[in-house]
Amino acid sequence: MPPTAFRAGQTVYLVESGHRIREAQVRGRSGGLYTVRFTDTGGGIRVRRDRLYPTRDAAAAYVQQRKAAHQPIRPGYWHNVPIWEC
Image (cartoon, rainbow, N blue to C red):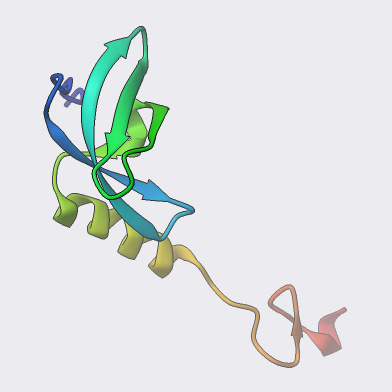
């Protein structure tokens, strides 16, 4: 299913640094980039469509998916390979 386009004035959610969700409002679209203005600070940014989510829940689901995919390095392991196999 192709992603839907956002309209000017619509509220969207942006994931920053893979974990922080910020609310923004679409101001316009040019080519493949959307101009959004943050509701908390008033600042703005231009981003691709794939970084925007229509609801906070959709953005939170993406953040949870990234957390589940992340595998931390365990103590005693080097790049998740046991020391005795190096």
